[in-house]
Length: 273
Image 1 (cartoon, helix red, strand yellow):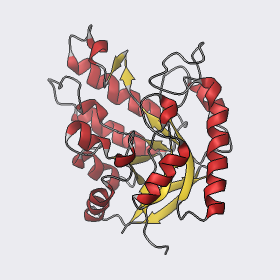
Image 2: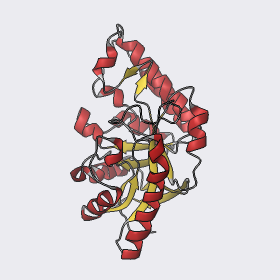
Image 3: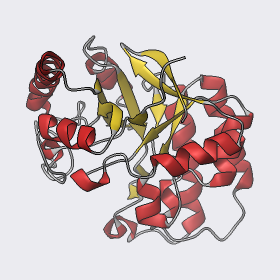
């Protein structure tokens, strides 16, 4: 078995408009922080939107997509030639937007991609991190039900290798009034049936005081045999790799000894330290 390495498959850089650094700078800072397997995974363009760059502060422009992939390949080759000891993977974080699957499926077919993270940031027009979108939200339970159902759709779409920040709705959205345990369990079943992986996302600690997903959800995923990976969701250099040691310890306590990573959309397993 290979030597255990710090894995971080969820990172961002300046193209998304709300993170810092170039791809090379992110790689060098990650290496300096001890990361051994790094994935670049900035926010994908809105491939189905009629405009090239409708939200410059949220994701890259559609016209930047080829440049992103070209630059990632070039930086990876250059740093390997230099001898920098870091295993670089080319990924992307794409939103799941019902009705746009065909456009995303075509774009995400690019052979340069090692993996695709899938995220649900909004459901029924309500965004998990944007209170300004909640103006017509009279019943918080509607938001929570719609969110978990969107996650099930994302899992079954076949677009993604990994689902990101699984329970992000807990960070800011109004708390539900009813118990949605059945919705959550149904979502874990759908993820297991679809064969998609789930990340432990360290931004949950920054946003909600605990990892995404919560411990009970992670236990349910592990019990169902769902592959697990790790991502810091770093938008700043100092966030790269943060939380990995705690995530590894948590997974060990649940009986896991490996994390899943990806190369060429195929699974590559990494031992936990």
